[in-house]
Length: 517
Image (cartoon, rainbow, N blue to C red; front, side, top):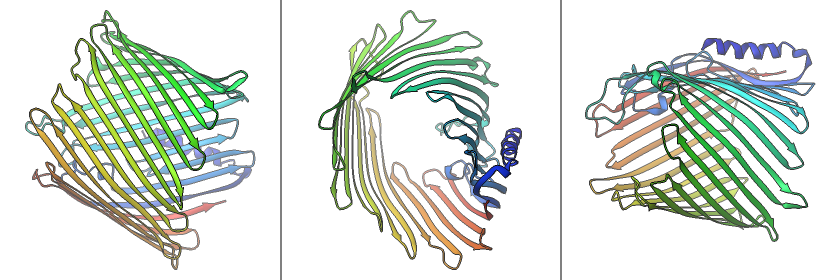
């Protein structure tokens, strides 16, 4: 993986070697060290999975502008550590663009942290405009995952860690044509998946996708859209093949008095070379929207779906309503309601019939010179008579920010969520409380400071507590240098399982140099 890091650094340095052509540039170089003191079960605290102790080097918020319009931007974080996150882009408006990236992540599965997996994704993308109406684009990425993982849900008889080692190479290329509000695009995507532990999973995939959007001549208020996609995957050892053909289309009508009407359809046929019949999925949806500019808006919609595999079929009907209102004085009200009913129309289905409902509403107040506050309510329900199951979820949350120009900024919030699941054999309930706050000061005598915390408590059939504390301070000297200290405390306890506890103290010290030229 180091070779990809060198490529990114070499690309950046090669571009900067022509600095004589530059007009301006800015960014910051960060050099520091992270100290970690951990105790307990390392697999239970997700916030620290991807933390590493050691020396860190970063180039952040870097932007370099050339007189000829070329722009170089970079955000290369922790390039010397295994939790690196790097992005580099070279662009010239209206002509071309090139982007590179490399990201890594670790997931821990056991008490000591020795059983873990590491995932990395490295790639590049580009776009070129050879003609004012034509864009050529493409790219590729390499994804790899290796290590050992365990079954997190088998508490009674935990399995031995399973070795994981697979990779996937993916690539795409396409062409887009834009002309007077009309667009036509064609793209090819391919991928090769290789599992070094289970070769039977090796497969190749490709997708061909075309889409178009155009207004009707002499009726520009009427916009048509549609597309076609063919997808195919084939397993290397067995030569088993799955394919799907999808067609979709729609129309959008801009009507008088700020009304908008939309209709869309979707048809997909999926099958394999071992099936005698294929599965068809058909969907139709209509929406009507009315806007009162700057004051209010309403949307209503209906969708009908059919899934048919010759012997079994089910249908679904769904409705959607939403609206927003700005009565003045900095207030804004929003609401949404959706429902869906799925019914077996012929034959049988494992899940049988099912009903779903979702409702949410929010009230927001914003005063530009002071801050904002928002109150949100969210409710979900799901019922299945065949399984004898019902799921209810309710969440109420408040978030607010207060900006004091002379002192700093304060943000805080509280959320309560409750859930209940039951079927013919068992029931499960939980009640969650989440409190968070952040206080950040303005700069006084070249010093800034901050404090924050996140407290989570779950009760009833869950009995979990988590607390994260954040302290930070920075001192600016010699105009463009800064010494920064960040101290984070993480604590997690599962009071139902004796060995699921975790405490970590993480200190990060950085010397930051702002650069401009």
